[in-house]
Image 1 (cartoon, rainbow, N blue to C red):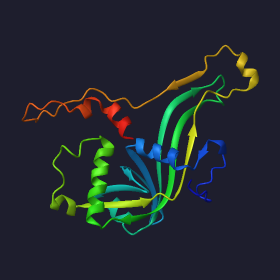
Image 2: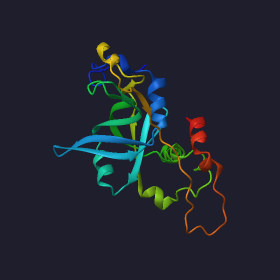
Image 3: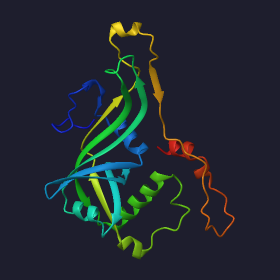
Image 4: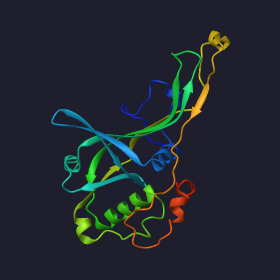
Length: 220
């Protein structure tokens, strides 16, 4: 269970709050992109980027020349978020329309990873977070590519999740209205793979691509 802090305490709809590792890690492990917010010279900034979780840390990576990465390299604190919309909640009244969602909000200081093994492990985890099994098949980074890549970690310490699930909560008198109400589920759905036209070999599409949804669920 993560500690509740002034930053992570959820007061609005507090019953939807979750501070346990299982819920938080499950949301983080399902995601592919996060948003990182920080302040640069008094200007609020928020950047979307890929990430992965390894143990108690979140990792991101980018070019050593990236303005975004160089800003974070000074160790500043950020707010990192991951969210999913699982369904549209359609009520009988406009006021009670909502969405079913899962979200994580993390407050942490950025740390540049300098240990070469940790950097390598983070890039492997990142690749397999995108599509499990990919790292073992592809050409892995060479020394030049590693030198040009910055890896930054964030400790998962000050964090909370918020989850909304279920049907609409209409006013009692509105249940008599002849208006359809319910939930329209939403989900990320993989499509048919498109082979690179520059393929020089008659290489079949890997099973971890054609079975992406099942492979990812088994890994998470």
